[in-house]
Length: 138
Image (cartoon, rainbow, N blue to C red; front, side, top):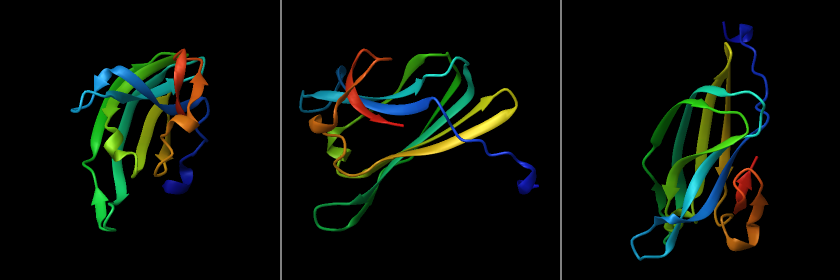
């Protein structure tokens, strides 16, 4: 039963959104890439990342993006894996990344939500695992 499942906290894993010359949006400006970061000394197995955006547009109408799902067989220890490009036109929305993975037989999951207008140059910080700046959510 549900009470028999141990829900240990997710530690040593985060999501970062970084500017990237490789992810060019339609108007020719540099785009941004979403990365999954594993700071742990062990691999993450059977990783699933589900992403979507939600909020309101300038007229106050509700907006919801498509849900994208990404499956990764394994994420190596102390590594960063690109998940998807993200268009800066979506930065005014809540951008949610729901991560699930296994460590041995134990399943872990956590939601990472970048609130509206948090992905801005003022919030860039150095991300050692990537050796570049980005917006880090942990």
